[in-house]
Image (cartoon, rainbow, N blue to C red; front, side, top):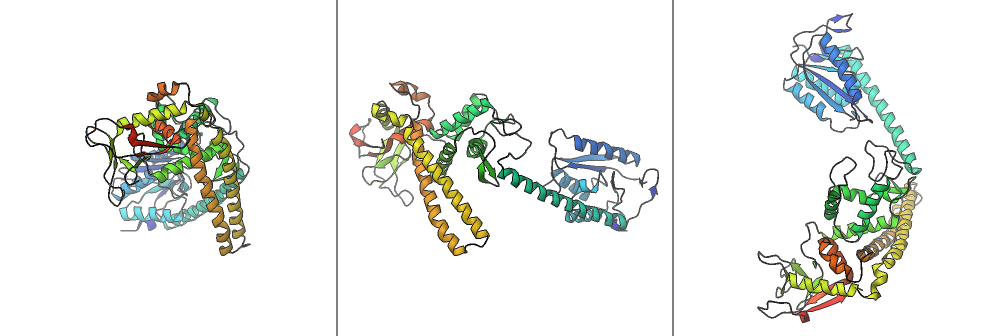
Length: 483
């Protein structure tokens, strides 16, 4: 059998393509790198021209394979292209029609893989609408290789130009393009949408007040607030929105904040830092499952001083001092959850009604301190960036760079820890007084309730109780107050 790369063809000059027969099921492949309008008009035009060519040479079309809005140079997976290769290898397709070789691939190595696939499958017919080449001939394959190399060079040059443009836009605080607008902004990625901006502010405030991402997604669904694509909110999507520097008027590039943006901020940079601090704190705590206990993490054993852990039973919920190497408790203290929670929640509500906590409930302490810490963090990050640039220019050695970096990173870690502490006071901001909070308590989410309690109580020590007692003895409970 004559190898594919050396197979010749008989040409009809009027058609400018080989006259072939015996093709049972040809594959048509169409691809376009960028579809900014999302209407697939580019691939539609390619498909139309490919169908016309197949009809002229008398080929039956078995399937059309389309990769829309997907680069052939980036190395990303092209699922339709991979499926076509698999179908060719398994004999389900016996010819290929494509608009141009650069639609098939823009990488020389990929062209060689394509040739090897069709060679092994015994496929002899590969035709292009534009380019007038036959990969079944030696000269045609040479032309194809040259064109693939030229296409790869063009793509590399374009990629370099685009990266330079993106770097310049980032330095100027201009937005980066994309087919999907960011939540809170119009399609120009600069103009703020007032209705969505209000949602962002509410979500940030409620997250800082202690609500979980899960409960906030539920709330957004109940309020009929969709994502920009019209879908329902999920925790990863909402986390990405809250972490974004964009909503704080900051321009991010390659995963880092590079400076102020040209658009208006929806929240302050200090509030974003507090959001990031709370996310870090929650990640460190390891909490992933939905909360069922309002006092989790706040109780200590009166016998050994160890932490009490939630321990559900079929008929009741309990807090237990657990023994063993993981928990290191004495294992000799248990308290039923509901009466203890009712007792401490009532104590918290009474304390919040006191006038001495008015300044904390207004969030004044947290706001001022958070602003100072946020400014300090920004200065630390600028110092680290300056150090990195000096090291890159070989103005300082690696030893000097490490020595200068370590105290800055320790300072940043301490500031983030302080921010995390300050975010607890956000749980007390804008709480209704005069008994209204008690009336609204049952309507708050469990994560919100827990955040309010944790903002007021540092921890509570639970003393030993009488065996068989059916009610909580208040003398067993000693609350250690934060405020």
